[in-house]
Length: 468
Image 1 (tube, rainbow, N blue to C red):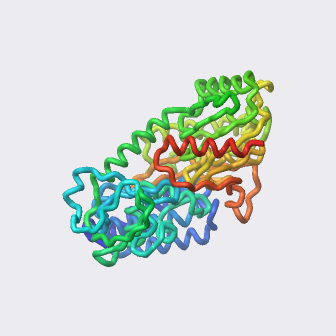
Image 2: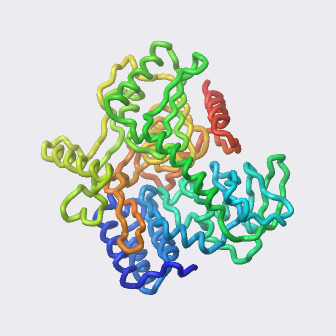
């Protein structure tokens, strides 16, 4: 590991103390998916590791490994710019950008600023859109098994880890499997469908290409967060909801959107509905949506602020953001309901709905690795309460329980951001020894389609093929 930024042991222990304190004070149920004795051991071992000087990248790796073992996908670590600079300074990358579509590793477009760094002596340059099937004689799944040791996910599932690694594949590859030679074999499928293997020299990462791709992705993600969803009636036969995020799916405007959508379904006598949740990492729990599925007064599970905001447990939490304000408000509201005797252990029941608008037809839900948090719980509710079929790939999020309600904590010396989650949600289901079984699709789909609009059409056509 590079020693570009080495911290003193004293500073490392300062960071550790903040991390351990906040994890215990603010994580909803810290042992929701991992037993407490194991967590104590992981923290003790981390403290011992930090008793010798480490580079920032080494520290990031240590914290990542501990957070992964909590098996809660909402609990995350985000590195600082210095960590990224240390990764880039190692010059341990291939000269092209890559990202995941599902479980397919794809070569991205190359920014012109990166072109002078190319080794033009290579016998064949890899083209944008080509699919990489192995690097350094390891398949994508083999690499992900090692990379996954530093990526958190619900219940330790690999599904969400693919989504998390999707846009920073080379960073996590370098974290888990740094190249040990200066020449690496890469096997890929060209756009002409030829399988080719080429030896590439390692060196500087195509940073301009990476930054350009991430900037575009960030803009798309922000736009989806501002949108509470889209609804269409297609071919005069099918209702179609497309939810890319549930961040803004609440309030009067959203309630009106849902009412109008289900009114159209009722008036046009549509009895086949597709709910597309691909790439939806969640937001607000969709109890309002479910009332149009099951009617009023149905138990959908529980939602509890396990670690409410108090003067004693908010010391290290970032307070200048909407997440902290929401946590403060929800803590106050829960306290009032408890005082009034209306909290009822956080049980969430569906509210009043016009019975004429309750949908009684067939439903197909589309999920993938990015279907997480409230989106995964909606898929769970639709499958188990409305007999929905699932197509695509297994949802990245749990169908049973999780910690959520993200608060941000900045470790004072390294600058790492830790996402801590003071709330705990549960679906209506009892826990099981195999939490992944229920998420498996009725129709598994993993065809590589590069263009997003073509993917949308493909998944919709496959969805309606499941209707009786």
